[in-house]
Length: 331
Image 1 (tube, rainbow, N blue to C red):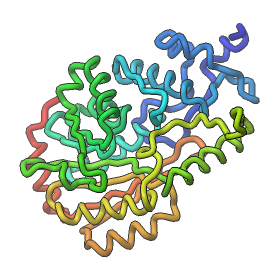
Image 2 (image 1 turned 90 degrees about the horizontal axis):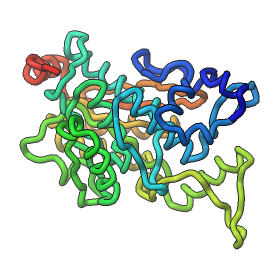
Image 3 (image 1 turned 180 degrees about the horizontal axis):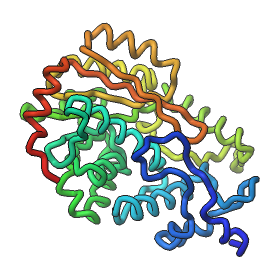
Image 4 (image 1 turned 135 degrees about the vertical axis):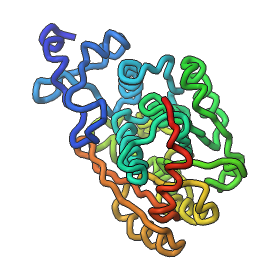
């Protein structure tokens, strides 16, 4: 990297309009991040405005950036991913957790509950275990993290082994029924304050591949192998990228299952990537007669997404829940 590039290492703006408590506001301090993850320095480039940046379409670049951010901002050691797994951007994942914390505060006299008395359920935690790691580090919450893939859970265990304090607060569970979400995973003595999920987006493997190809071609970077097939650099296992019916069907199934355990979880929630899916989601919430629901818009750079949260409990029950579970919270 040139001396001129080094002098501009603090000028790349990764995010905008994020939650006020998000640690990733403003500009990445690449000089500091390179000290933590030296290999990242080899992947930095100058963008058209002459600012030091990186290729965010390159999974290796994103992975190294994640490793550096997780270490510098949250004290997480030994984070890594197999090359074929989906690599989630840290700032956006942190945003989701901060908005959930605000949601819990609404029934707790405006105070965000912290500490191990707060128990969150992460559906489809993946190999990255990203939500439990950030949520436990930021708020001291306890997590149960589920996945249908044993390899993904195995990688998550390796990460936790490097972080013994977090390991005490994060329980990993295998969902053995691939078509189930809450069913077969929540025990009779389980009670969760919030559930969260980043559902698979596409409806089929072919659609996922076509979507990745469009992204790659829009960047003007498509290359082809010896057989003329496109070589794609957007990572992700099948279950991370697609399911039958796509995002809408997954969330609708989640809502229907939640109706069978209305008092087991205070707030159910999910990310929603596609705004056109919202009418179907809201219609399903009406069908199962939730007590209330909230839609929260989240922005990161030029990307807008949203989270949908719903509850079967009324405000008085929320207040009673908070007093029962969080009144003696200590972190």
